[in-house]
Amino acid sequence: MELDNRTEIFGQEKRLEVIHIFGRPMPYAWFMPVIPIWLLRADYDHLPRFFRKYVVRRTNSVIYENEFNIEPPVMQLTSEAYPSYNLVVSVDFSAAAHMPADDAIVALRIKNHAVTRIRPDYDQVKKKIVFRIDELRNERLRISWPLVQGTLSEQ
Image (cartoon, rainbow, N blue to C red; front, side):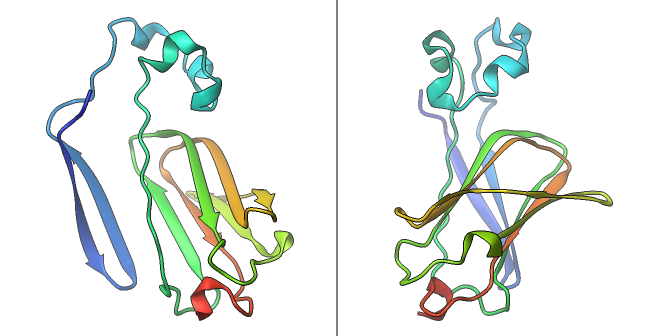
C-alpha cells in the first residue's frame, strides 16, 4: 500500500531537521497491538513470514558529499518521544580511497546524562560501517570519525 507522504527540511548548514509527514496514520492489522514487541524486534528479513506483510518497513537515505567541514566529522540522529525500532545506520565509504580504522569510529548513545558507546559491524570489503539499534527513544545517536587521507570529506 502506498502512503501519501512528504518531507520538510528545516535548518541551516550546521543543523538540519528532516520531518517526515504522512497524510494519514500508517495502516496496521487489528491484531498487531497484541503481538509482543520483542517478537517484532528482529531484522525485517528474519521476521516470521506471516508478520512481514503486516509490519511497515520504512527506509530513508541521505547522501553527504563534501559535507563535513569540521574535525572530526559528526553525524547525529535524534529520536524524540516516539521510538524508532530496529534502526540500522549504514555509513558508506565506498566512494573514498580509504575508510577510518575500526577503532577510530566512535558511536555514542546519549540519553540525558548517560552515554553508552556502541560498536558497529565493520565491513572492510564493502567499505561500510553498520550500526544496529533495537530501540531509540528520547536520545541521540552521535557518530564521529577522524579525517583520513582520501576519505569523502577531503575529496
